[in-house]
Length: 129
Image 1: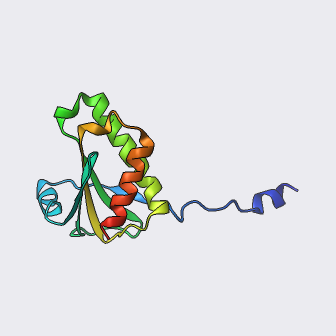
Image 2: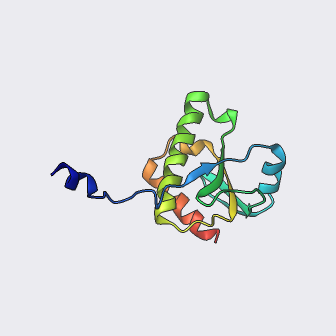
Protein backbone atom coordinates (compact mmCIF):
# COMPACT_ATOMS: atom_id res chain seq x y z
CA UNK A 1 0.00 0.00 0.00
CA UNK A 2 2.89 2.37 0.67
CA UNK A 3 4.21 1.78 -2.83
CA UNK A 4 0.88 2.85 -4.33
CA UNK A 5 0.85 6.05 -2.29
CA UNK A 6 4.35 6.93 -3.41
CA UNK A 7 3.47 6.43 -7.08
CA UNK A 8 0.57 8.88 -6.95
CA UNK A 9 1.87 12.10 -8.45
CA UNK A 10 0.94 15.46 -7.06
CA UNK A 11 0.16 18.18 -9.57
CA UNK A 12 3.44 19.74 -10.60
CA UNK A 13 3.84 23.38 -9.79
CA UNK A 14 7.10 23.92 -11.63
CA UNK A 15 5.25 24.58 -14.86
CA UNK A 16 4.86 28.11 -13.55
CA UNK A 17 8.02 28.25 -11.47
CA UNK A 18 10.02 31.11 -12.89
CA UNK A 19 13.25 32.41 -11.52
CA UNK A 20 13.34 36.19 -11.24
CA UNK A 21 16.71 37.54 -12.34
CA UNK A 22 17.72 41.16 -11.88
CA UNK A 23 19.90 43.61 -13.73
CA UNK A 24 23.32 44.03 -12.12
CA UNK A 25 25.35 46.62 -13.99
CA UNK A 26 24.58 50.31 -14.40
CA UNK A 27 24.98 49.95 -18.19
CA UNK A 28 22.12 47.43 -18.19
CA UNK A 29 19.92 49.84 -16.24
CA UNK A 30 20.66 52.61 -18.75
CA UNK A 31 19.73 50.31 -21.63
CA UNK A 32 16.56 49.29 -19.80
CA UNK A 33 15.42 52.90 -19.50
CA UNK A 34 15.40 53.29 -23.29
CA UNK A 35 12.59 50.79 -23.91
CA UNK A 36 8.80 50.99 -23.75
CA UNK A 37 7.46 52.77 -20.69
CA UNK A 38 4.30 53.17 -18.70
CA UNK A 39 3.69 55.28 -15.59
CA UNK A 40 1.17 55.09 -12.76
CA UNK A 41 0.87 56.71 -9.36
CA UNK A 42 2.54 53.63 -7.79
CA UNK A 43 5.45 52.95 -10.14
CA UNK A 44 6.98 53.35 -13.58
CA UNK A 45 7.68 50.28 -15.70
CA UNK A 46 10.29 50.19 -18.45
CA UNK A 47 10.52 47.22 -20.80
CA UNK A 48 13.24 46.71 -23.37
CA UNK A 49 14.29 43.84 -25.59
CA UNK A 50 16.42 41.45 -23.65
CA UNK A 51 20.12 42.15 -24.12
CA UNK A 52 21.34 39.47 -21.69
CA UNK A 53 21.66 35.74 -22.15
CA UNK A 54 19.10 34.06 -19.94
CA UNK A 55 17.88 30.59 -19.15
CA UNK A 56 14.54 29.30 -20.42
CA UNK A 57 12.51 29.76 -17.26
CA UNK A 58 13.90 33.03 -15.95
CA UNK A 59 12.48 36.50 -16.19
CA UNK A 60 14.72 39.55 -15.95
CA UNK A 61 13.01 42.11 -13.76
CA UNK A 62 14.58 44.67 -11.42
CA UNK A 63 12.95 46.74 -8.73
CA UNK A 64 14.31 50.19 -7.89
CA UNK A 65 13.29 52.05 -4.76
CA UNK A 66 14.91 55.39 -3.97
CA UNK A 67 16.25 56.14 -0.51
CA UNK A 68 13.93 59.16 -0.37
CA UNK A 69 10.97 56.81 0.06
CA UNK A 70 12.04 55.66 3.52
CA UNK A 71 14.37 53.55 5.58
CA UNK A 72 15.52 50.05 4.63
CA UNK A 73 12.51 48.39 6.26
CA UNK A 74 10.06 50.38 4.13
CA UNK A 75 12.06 49.89 0.93
CA UNK A 76 12.32 46.13 1.52
CA UNK A 77 8.58 45.95 2.18
CA UNK A 78 7.96 47.49 -1.24
CA UNK A 79 10.38 45.06 -2.89
CA UNK A 80 8.70 42.08 -1.21
CA UNK A 81 5.29 43.26 -2.35
CA UNK A 82 6.47 43.76 -5.92
CA UNK A 83 8.24 40.39 -6.05
CA UNK A 84 5.11 38.66 -4.78
CA UNK A 85 2.90 40.45 -7.31
CA UNK A 86 5.24 39.58 -10.18
CA UNK A 87 5.24 35.91 -9.14
CA UNK A 88 1.43 35.99 -9.37
CA UNK A 89 1.58 37.90 -12.65
CA UNK A 90 3.72 35.18 -14.23
CA UNK A 91 0.88 32.73 -13.62
CA UNK A 92 -2.02 34.97 -14.68
CA UNK A 93 -0.66 37.51 -17.18
CA UNK A 94 1.28 36.63 -20.29
CA UNK A 95 4.68 38.23 -19.86
CA UNK A 96 7.28 38.42 -22.58
CA UNK A 97 10.35 36.55 -21.39
CA UNK A 98 12.30 38.14 -24.24
CA UNK A 99 12.08 41.50 -22.45
CA UNK A 100 13.91 42.97 -19.48
CA UNK A 101 11.67 44.86 -17.07
CA UNK A 102 12.63 47.70 -14.76
CA UNK A 103 10.10 48.73 -12.10
CA UNK A 104 10.77 52.03 -10.33
CA UNK A 105 8.59 52.36 -7.24
CA UNK A 106 7.08 55.59 -5.95
CA UNK A 107 6.31 56.62 -2.37
CA UNK A 108 2.56 56.10 -2.81
CA UNK A 109 3.08 52.33 -2.70
CA UNK A 110 3.60 52.39 1.06
CA UNK A 111 0.18 53.80 1.90
CA UNK A 112 -1.98 51.84 -0.54
CA UNK A 113 -3.54 48.42 -0.34
CA UNK A 114 -1.86 45.41 -1.87
CA UNK A 115 -4.93 44.69 -3.98
CA UNK A 116 -4.85 48.10 -5.69
CA UNK A 117 -1.14 47.86 -6.44
CA UNK A 118 -1.59 44.34 -7.82
CA UNK A 119 -4.41 45.36 -10.17
CA UNK A 120 -2.49 48.32 -11.57
CA UNK A 121 0.67 46.26 -12.09
CA UNK A 122 -1.31 43.57 -13.93
CA UNK A 123 -2.92 46.22 -16.15
CA UNK A 124 0.41 47.87 -16.92
CA UNK A 125 2.12 44.60 -17.76
CA UNK A 126 -0.73 43.90 -20.19
CA UNK A 127 -0.26 47.37 -21.78
CA UNK A 128 3.44 46.85 -22.44
CA UNK A 129 2.78 44.10 -24.97
